[in-house]
Image (cartoon, rainbow, N blue to C red; front, top):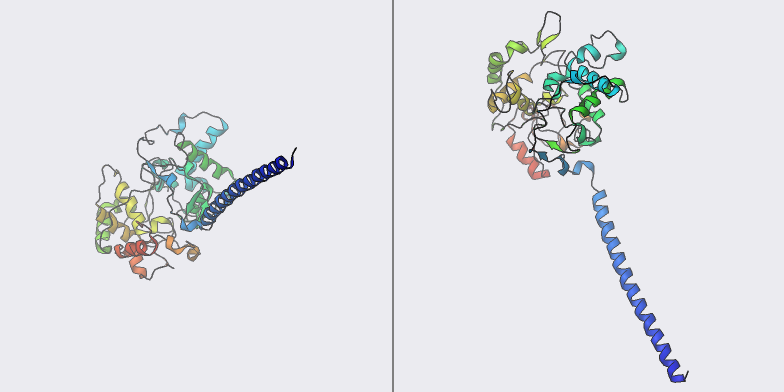
Length: 360
């Protein structure tokens, strides 16, 4: 090879090497930029606290195209397998709570409910009636973020929240037979419902909140006319001759405590509007929004058990429902307004300050 040819070969190799290095640098730069961008996005996501996400996530959008409440929920038609037996026992616990795990069951080691309510008193028709906090569809929506604890919690934790508040009792062992049976029943009620979806009929249906304070006088009058024949004038319920409640107490020692959701005027009004008096439904309500609002306000003036450590509820106070009747609150509205309204000013404040939509 001549000197000239040797020089050309060296130059060609050099050019090839330089071009290769150039492309390697460009490719490396692109990769580094992509990784940096992805890291920035991941950092932004991970820096959010649970409380900064909306309570209802996108996966909880309501499905309206199918009626999941028209199924046959008769547990007596189930077989005798171990699973079927657990489902039946779960149903019994929901319908006969006071006898099985309440104060009068005769076995102190199995006394978890602190009053003589049944779970079915709030979760009507054993948790199968739409818009009465039904269990239908609930199984697939847990784990779930809840503002009361400011964390993602399990279905078992949610059940125990009811045990400590609505039932004024203590927690069930999460791996015990009773808890496993209740969860098995909820799972059975939720079959065929897509996991994570919030179906039409879940929870309570919101009312149009009156633009005024609760009228306790009107609520007392309406209660006497439309509620007292079942729940008694003082709210302590009506018993059968055998001592069991024919109609549950909504006040007194056998009722829910002041830490329960039903002790909030707006939550209670939603339940009352579409479920009370007996026979009311979403399609055929008996009361107006304003009547339900006033009755709820009056009921929540009645005596009931206290709840310890309510100050620990809602670690992120901006998540606290506006009609929670006990403090502290993140806002400066007076306690009386939180308990009885008017609520529009409070609703607007949370919308402006935190971009949160409040309806209870």
